[in-house]
Structure formats: C-alpha cells, structure tokens
Length: 201
Figure (tube, rainbow, N blue to C red):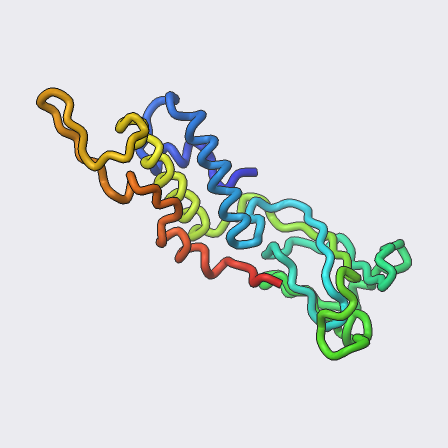
C-alpha cells in the first residue's frame, strides 16, 4: 500500500490530466523506497516478522504503532517451535513506541555483559495499522515526489542538458540551479523524516 494516492499527489503538485501518470507513479515508488530505507521503517502497515537479540528486557520493533502481536517466540537454538512461544502475560507491549518489555527479566539470561546476547533468538510476528501514515511523512513523500517531478520536467524541457539558460528565437528560458545540478534529496525532506528514523543496530 503506497504512502499516498496518485490522485492526492497530482492535487498537491497541481498536475492536470493523466499524461504524466506513469512518471509520477514511478517517482512515488522511488520516494516510498527511499523513505523506507532512510527511516528503516515501513509506514504502509501490514504484518511483519522480525528477529532480535534476546539478552535484554526490551525488544525494539522497526514499525509502529503496533496494532497487535501475533506471537513472540524465544529460542536460543533459533528453531522457534510452538513450545518456545512466550505467554502474553510475561511481557507488555508499548504500542506507540514499538517496544516489547519483558516483565520477568531478560528474555534469555545473558552470558556476557550486554543486551545484544543471543542474537536473532527472539522472533516477533506483529501487525501495524494500514492507512495511518503520519502527516509529516506524507508531506515528506509529497515534497520528494514534487522535487523529482520538477527535476524530470526541467531536464526534459532543457533536452536533458545541464543548462542555466536556453534561448530559442526570441524566447529565453531560465532554469533554477537547484533543478539543474541534480540535488536529489531536499534538506526539508530529511528534516521531516528525522523524528521517524529507527537507529541503526
């Protein structure tokens, strides 16, 4: 499920007709992929399976807010059979932060100092709601699609040459430096996305 609809993108960009629908769809796919990689999160919602180190008392899921936990299994052998599933009464879910907290100590007793013991020994299957993309992420998505769209249209108008100005007959067209030098990601987009980034593990 995309971060926003083609119709909404066209409304925000003041694009009439359907002549650029294919281009806009491709730019939307690229923008969504960038946002997912940059934030390390998926905002579209759905069901996810993640593996985490089990030597601590908390598991930090990549996607949130959490709608439900299908199951949490902890297994040092990483087989994750049905007998390794943890009872829901042994942990609490902080839905808005995407955190699962053990109520009775580490999920597995650490064999050295540090909560990264037992890597990939906790398996979590969970869901997040669809259609609940934060407004700031939608704005970043629209801004990025719009920037790339203007860049593509400017490049086409300038015959894909890096021109600042082009004279044809008595008509002279000027092109913004920001749209001819290939500025890929506007700083404003990164600022909007910064609060939603999941720290690298």
